[in-house]
Length: 424
Image (tube, rainbow, N blue to C red):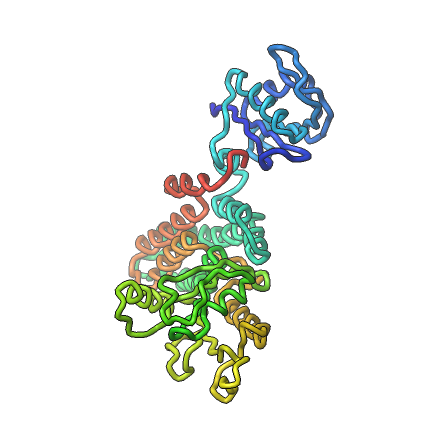
């Protein structure tokens, strides 16, 4: 039997209200020792919370009771919605810690129990972790779609089709003529499912949305890169001087642009550097240009590196010597000229590598297992034996079990749930 666990599930006090959660076989008995008779399941009731050892009044709280398995964790759960002062919260937590059979929850343990008890699958747990960490509107929407079971429901539809393929293969093994070859219907259905999985694998992944779109500002020394970084970010993040080679290392500024997460990155000026430290910065700048999702180039347009998503601009457009005919989008970090157009173009290019607002997207782990399933189904075409075809379907089913967390994911679980706070 699992331990009964408790933790503060809301933010650290002080706050107007704090939520303390208890989950496990002894949750109801533990809560009754503080609150007396509990309200009916899924009904809130106001109760005095008292120390069961001394009778001391701890607080007056709203108490909610949930009976397993119809609860967030699949176990008996009680929540105290108490006043959010530090002393109140500490007193209640300290009192719960004195009750036999109760212990403080580990990070993510409530959510892990929900997973282990079948309330959510691994994709929903990953979506919930991303939702908690979301900092932009696009991150919130993408994470919520997965956390609410959108990907799980799609996977269930694929699994149902795999079960049909398994049944077709097993029936053919048992009843078909040995010389009849593999059923064409089985090949057709496997091809259709493999193609559909391939389409999903070709969609934009969630990592750029989670980590931020890497927007690299590059060009020769004194082109105005650092001034542009400061103008876009609205603060002096990069040192600006008229001395070439001032920027030695890259500087990254996280931003939200049109609800999209952006990692705006300043780089060292590209030139042949005699200074050893500057040369290292130039080398790093080259690597960042290669890794950039979007490149903002401030040098001669004809010298811009080849990049699929590049914005060539004419910096310092406020200077009389910077005629628009020189090429590129005229931008002035001093007057703000062209800044609106520049940001709009960066946002437009960034959206090419991000999932659509209404689309489900895969993370790297999910895409790996989906690729394993698609590869197994593709391989059925090369099979000359029904038993081998059935084995390919089995491999695809195992890949889906790993995708949803039904098999072989212990290391993933430990890494995932450690991202959660104590009360989640």
